[in-house]
Figure 1 (cartoon, one colour):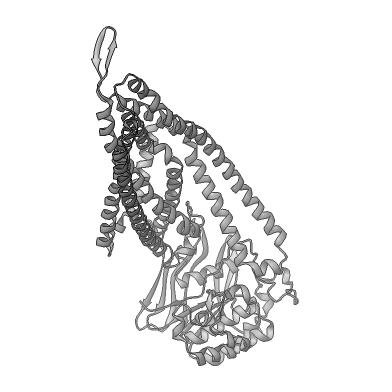
Figure 2: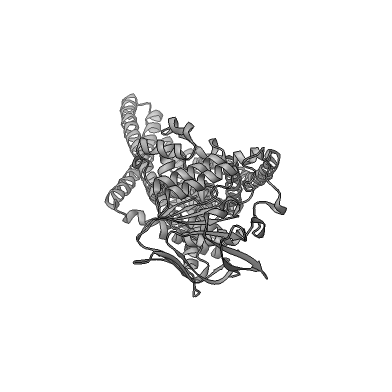
Length: 632
């Protein structure tokens, strides 16, 4: 790729990032943000004043030493104290304002990205569409931080170097003089010749550094990807600790983590090689920058054209000018890391935009879920379910589920889960219309209920505030579902998805159902890990507590046979699934006619492992957190 192409690409990334992140300076607190920005700019000017003052002070100090002037020396000592106090005040103020601005920008951008990701089921749907959006948690937590913090750091350091260049350019020009140079018999005066030398020196160093450091960009991006994959795998092991323990999968998980860490090692080695090349050059360059200006100006001092103070001032001014011009060298590694994080943030943002485009249909039909007034049933009107790639999963069907009915959806497990998600509004692929009653509450209970970390009271009330449930109410629902032993732990702070067995987690799902009191209840294997007695108790609890509610069971009939009135069978034929509605007659429809997707070849689960039907922890969880749809 040519330098011009790389420049265009970098400019494009810069514009795209500030198109989504620049709104911070126009947000509801824009005047505070702008005041902090102006203050930071003023403090940066104050930072530049210090080295300029030190340069002038150094010239006078060495002149005083050369002249052995005690009086001037004492005056310069007092001046040094003033410069010191001013520098401390400016540096501390600059640090505080900068960090406050960085945190505010990160908080604003994090909120914007999270609001685009954690809404309308997009945190689930994004995993089903192609694109560069792996590990969104790492992109939000780490890459947003790097993108905002490093952007301000780089902008401030660049501003500082530009102001430093302006200040020391004038100093270097004034002390360079205008020596005469004779070339081919022609004598010319060269005013500010030291400035030209500094420019050529810095330009040569910057060019070499850019060529040597180019691999850092790719190495930093690749390493961050490896690190994110490793972090995600560790987090998944922590989240699935119980099923891994039950399946004795520790060896396989260690092997998988070692494989992912091998990628981390490769990324580290690649970045180390790139950093080594850059370090070899920058270390030689920094040492040469100290000696080179003194050697260049030494002949004028030896000839008596300048004093010792001017010689030292020349050396310092030359170093400061070269340092300002060497900003690309000094910040190449950080700029590479910033760009890598920006690209990952943009990748997630672009994936969310692509998902919005996908959900809008992109010229094709999508499943529409609507709430309609004066409707007391759920209706499926010409509904077809498809995969994101367009392959038909469930062939077109029409269905009406009247109020208070008990309906079983059984058969193909994958199609049943997609139908479950379509009603919840998180599976848009397909076409047709799903009509829900506008003035009723709909509740979804997946096989694996979502249990947020925190007090047990918050688990029962989720997704509303924990304060909404009283002590007596929490105690009553826990006792009703057979979790009396958890009553003393109502306000205990725990990671309940890790501390409770799956059977008790499912009972908590039923307790949450008792708190929410919905009108329409969808249950997808919500009692699959309970023993037959426990499952029957929960189903009788539903019959007793929700006689006026509609219950839709998704899964193998088993103990559900006597609890539903109709069966919706999903039969796979020729690569797609066809829906067949049948009246529920337990005597005429034995369990064997509807295969249990959890039990291959009708093998019973191991009674010693009540959670043995848990999904493979190494595979993505196809279910959704249970949530309530509220009227719009």
